Length: 593
Image (tube, rainbow, N blue to C red; front, top):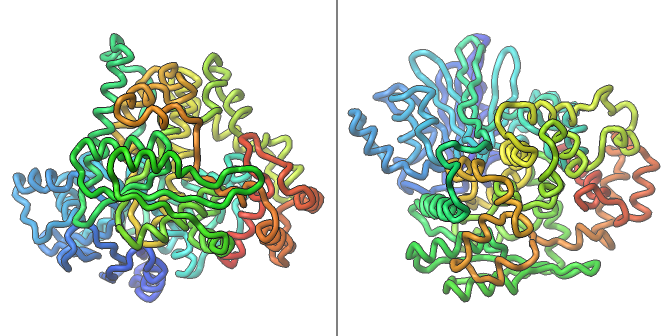
């Protein structure tokens, strides 16, 4: 796990090594264990290292393979790199390190751009061919690892974070109006390739980009799960699906234990993270360290779920850390979490993950997390209303239960000059739902949420907040083989038992029944959901800052109304609407936009 940056010139000039060095310096938090810089004519690469596999200098990056004429920078982990290494040795390749980075280079030499089809893991990487000048950029199937782009006619810059690109200079920082409409509709999600800024894009998940020396390029989507029934499994019973799901998850959890340093688990006390702990214990993992977080209660909402996380920790004998966040840390933690965001993310979970990661990073470098199960297996409450909706009516039904607000009411919040002349969010969902596969409305929603919404909400949140402290988070529920299997499961099995029914039934006898039967939990930060005192004042400061007034994004009367009753106005899914507005301004102000 690391941070990478680079520049490719197309105008005959040498790459700006100083700019790449500056961008790389902005990634120190992602890779506190070392740094590297490499330049060759029109290409320059920078890297910050978090040492997880092959802790020696042989694993340093940028990694130059002289024999193959390649240079690689890589962020992520190839979980089965040892098996791939043996396969590549069988093809005649000789290795000089024990790192998974070198495996990527050798795999590229062997299979070209198709190397991604051989990888099990999370990754964003860049490979430079010395002789031809051709460059390949790639991102993993579920978009777990980020890759931001600054594209122009003369050059392409890339980095693991958006702020690193901004530090390189020369970026158009005007706001993308379509992205703004997405932000206000999809609870802060801006689907790739857009970001909130016109001058920054992001490589979509499951995408390979081949860049030629003249700047021309081709993009290829190499993975696209169908979320449809498999004819070969049409006779499977419910028990068959449950057994297959647990087997697949067991494999995914075990894959993610590969490391030359200890691996812990973020244990919320919900079924997802509890099941990860249980499967690790079942596999004989000794001395497992687990971590849970709690806050002070506010507005009648509980601030912790220690009861359940402690139950799981005691059942499986983990070295458990209950981290209670003192109120004095929360307000500065909000600003620090905003600073750690590559893009504005409205979920209050960001602050929880940021503060949790700060403390966890003092003990371990790698953790597993239960993120992703709700999107993949139908755990959210907007899926059941789609159960009996005809497929042709899926877009409207999904929009009604999922959108923060419909386009017709967006003008009540945004000022006229920021409004589009068309309903871009609905057009986006219509295009996504219109793709082949996903034969039911529930399937269409799950496919969209798994491949789009998940990527730019919980997945990005976990990456940004953990990597802010040099902590690598691994997400077994987003193993792509597990996702493929889950997509084939009949929707009624996922929606059973209040959501994630197939997982709950498969977990009986593995995790405590009290965890399976509890009401759905979350990372609670009540002080943000119920704005008051200094937290409300922080919101007020952001929305009345001179830069916010000059920008003029929001209708003044809407802002005044929300500030007067800060906890009254909620989005469709129950989030604080005032926080959504304030978070965007806080992020823009933090980035100097």
